[in-house]
Image 1 (tube, rainbow, N blue to C red):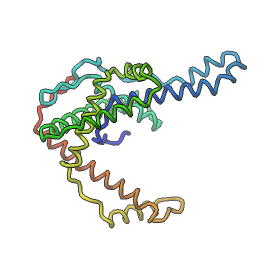
Image 2 (tube, one colour):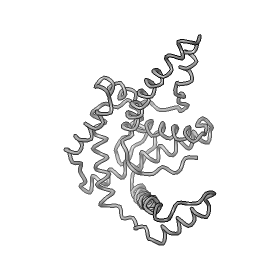
Image 3 (tube, rainbow, N blue to C red):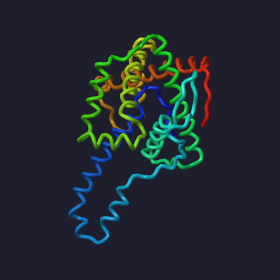
Length: 252
């Protein structure tokens, strides 16, 4: 099953746009590699195309402009929810699980809604506390996004697949910066202790079938992982506090 979604904010449309960019590049590479072989076989092109085609989504998603939830008066559109739900579906597929089972479909729906509501209350609180995005950084990140595509047409094609406009993408990048400022200044997670790092290493070494790398080699990675867990737990706690005082109406 999917682990409970972390509230590390990321632009949902951005993930899909870059995913589309990656898919297009991979598809082009596969076509170049397969071309000589398909010329030598009958019906090879059709068979190869079927194997390379991405799996069709099994999700029953709302219309992109439908209102799926209202959080403190702010409407959340279907395309935002859909972006998160598709990411969950992809996660299950990458884990070798069937997202079409009744249990997994319900899991995707529940977790996707939880994520969009959680991010909404966090961003609302961030803006109420005065956190703002640096417009120079927003512009810089927009240029980095555009650099992922061969040209403007390729970028617009990827955007069209997500249902988001370039202006909406820019707003999501702006919200990401607000979120990052909020996390840095408002979320107080405990620092990982040396004892916790050592205990985690010892547990790993005991359970590993092969000889574990030296503690000094793994220590930075273990410490970072444990700190991320602490940050997530602190964020979840803040989300729960905000949700208790929020007016939330789920319309899905």
